Amino acid sequence: QLQLVEYGGALVQPGGSLRLSCATSGFTLDYYTVGWFRQAPGKEREGISCMSGNGDTTHYLDSVKGRFTISRDNAKNLVYLEINNLKTEDTGVYYCAADARGLGDVFPEAKEWGYWGQGTLVIVSS
Image (cartoon, rainbow, N blue to C red; front, top):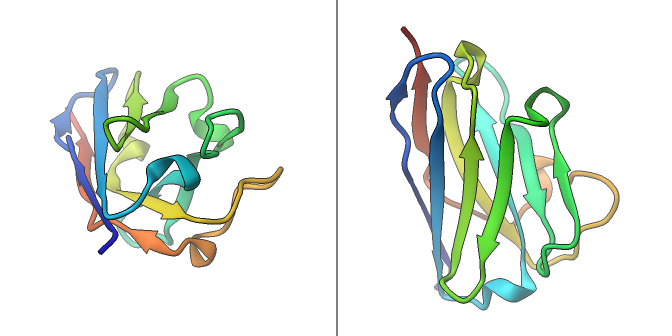
């Protein structure tokens, strides 16, 4: 059974840093595109970053470029999201997602992803 479990969410002050992790199991991570989404209170889920199976292709939401970094360790079945210079608008539930389809030139919409974790909460507040 394919599973994704996020962890690392916390309450942090503006300007702080955080690393979110996504532990995967039940499938060979190498063959899957992975991504991170965020859902702020009262808003729709939005794509933050995604990466192809071999790591050659990545996409980022414009507002997080230069602050967020996605990475993966296929040998350890882990996906990471490094977040720096946190802003209050980064508050939300962060979800890890995976899909067996390859990653092209466009960030796939949330509805196109086949597998999801349960989310981890990040609150940015002073």
